[in-house]
Each structure stands twice: as C-alpha cells, then as structure tokens.
Image (cartoon, rainbow, N blue to C red; front, side, top):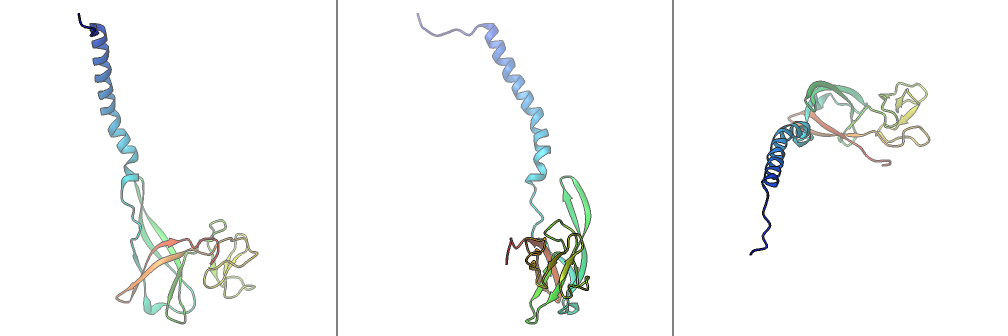
Amino acid sequence: MSDKKQVSRRQFLNYSLTGVGGFMAAGMLAPMVRFAIDPVLQPSAAGKFKAVVEESELTSEPQRFTWKINQKDGWYESEVEKSAWVYKKENGEIVALSPICTHLGCTVDWASNEEYPNQFYCPCHGGRYKKNGVNIPNTPPTAPLPLYEHKVEEGMLYLGQAKSRGSGV
C-alpha cells in the first residue's frame, strides 16, 4: 500500500472555493487599488517652463511678474497663478526669486517698508531678505528665498520650478 494521503471531497471543495474566492476578490480589488495609486504613477510635470516676460523688460531693480500654470492634484485640475521677483545683476545674470517667505509662507515685497529700503520685507513677522534673497540674520526667516529655474530663449524669459537653497548661502 502507498502512504499517499487522499484528499476528501470536503477538503477539495474547501480548497477550490477558497481559490476561486481569492481570484474573484483579487479581480475586484485590482482596479480599485490601481484607481487609488494612479496619480502617484503619473509622470510629474517638473521641469516645465512657462514664458513670463521679455528679457528686455528686466532691470536691476526687482520687479514682480505673474503667470498662470495648469496644476493637477490627483484627479483635480486647476489653473494656478504663480509670481516671482525678477531682476538682472550688473553682470547680466538673471535672478528669479520666489515671493514666498520661508518663515510662515507669507508674501514678501521689495522695498515696501521705509525702514528697510532695498530689502525684501515680510509683513507677517518682520522677516527681511537682502536683494539676492538671502535672509538677514536675527530675523524670523531661517532660510533664503527659493530661486526659480530659468532660461532665456529668443529674448523671452521662461521660469520653471522654485528650488530651495537650504538654510544658508
């Protein structure tokens, strides 16, 4: 006689129904899981540049420029307005700074406070930045203003994503 164990009819039905139920559950859950994680799998829009201003309009004094981008958050798409403080250095290099204070996210203005001419000033908590966007010591911001990626093509300034410069420059 052989020592093979026989599978009873009850065990066979139990194994079969469990397997079929598992396949059916996987078939129902797979689309739901894909639906939930699909936005994460989509390629990001990072690196896209938008035309903002003609290079000939830039001066050595920071000017605020605004533009609109299409933003996608999951399945929700919206048009969002962005802005930057842009100026040209004496050597012709373009500097594009984010207007968002690194302290609490308020909007900074150039030379808006009479006590601090030629500085970016945040009215929320008195944060101050030099013209190059570096935070002034002993003021609330602990990091410089982020810099926008930029390029010039055919006389037009294009701005991309704002990149953080860390806690000190």
